[in-house]
Amino acid sequence: MKIDGKPYRSIWRAPSGEVRIIDQRWLPHELRIATLATREDFAAAIQEMWVRGAPLIGATAAYGVAVQMAHDPSDAALRETWHILHATRPTAINLKWALDDMARVLAPLAPAERADAAFARAAEICDQDVEINRRIGLHGLKIIREIARRKAGRRVNVLTHCNAGWPATVDWGTATAPIYHAVEAGINVHVFVDETRPRNQGAHLTSWELNSHGVSHELIVDNAGGHLMQHGEVDLVIVGTDRTTARGDVCNKIGTYLKALAARANGIPFYVALPSPTIDWTVSDGLRDIPIEERGGAEVTHVQGRDAEGRIVSVQISPDGTPARNPAFDVTPAELVTALITERGVCAADETAMAAMFPDLATPR
Ligand code: MRU
Image 1 (tube, rainbow, N blue to C red):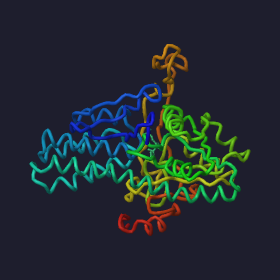
Image 2: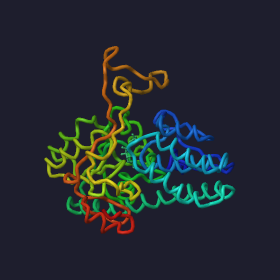
Image 3: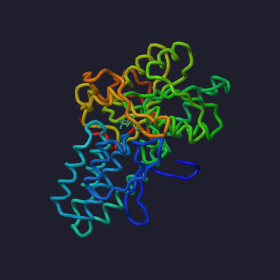
Image 4: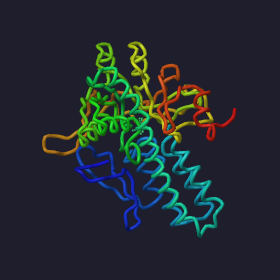
């Protein structure tokens, strides 16, 4: 997508061979580009959320393996790198998917062949992500177009949570891809952007990218969605996911579940934009089987913003020493999901439909 009219991906290889990312900790206030030069840089970038969003975490890990192979292509380094990067964040399955993919490609090769092969495979993973998201967008566009037709051209109102936009992927985003396609198709679309406490990915990132692309939107506090739904102001919800089980339970940013409950109570369709690498075919019961990241309490007791002098500051919003709990994700049971928008088409959130959509990926159980 574009920043100030210039095309960007969220991760790329510079002509010099260096791997670069947009350091998302400073958005929307500053566009800072960082170079990741060592395995430790990659691990820190994922863990400390310079990069975030399930598909981008996977793509970054793939390049982390490649950079390490250029330093040391031994079997031991390959194994160790898998473990170091895998330990960075526990919930998004794309991380393991990308690391397993890199290991599958690299393990059979002679060490001298590994660095080139690793960079090539990491680039393919990135290109594949872009194409997956573009296709998710085209399938989601059909849903938005149908709602626009029913509303006889009146504005279609989409609510989204967190940032499942292009900064969370290599490009396009998952939940935002249908919106970008709809805008390009001339459909009158408006987006309600949940701020998404505690880290405010909606306020910081989704608002920023929609603003950059001229997409009509309003930032709302996390608690406003239910009210807007009760008053007929939301036509559909589209969210992303960090891990979806083989039966369609959807793990996504904390607060997604409450939006799904409110959508169900108000008869509003609740869609999940789901790239196939985000499906964990090894688990079924999302509540039982998906590890939920618990992050530090400082994200709850403080908020980051920009002061009147333009400095980026962290502001404490609770009394000194307030204990805080910070689960970063929740699970929306499949029953609350209207459908999954995948790169192959729209499919019900259930085991049979998902296995029929991805017969080549589903593992028999
Ligand atoms: O903690 P984050 O910012 O990595 O969480 C991101 C989300 O929850 C996204 O909705 C999800 O990764 C899908 S991104 C296409």
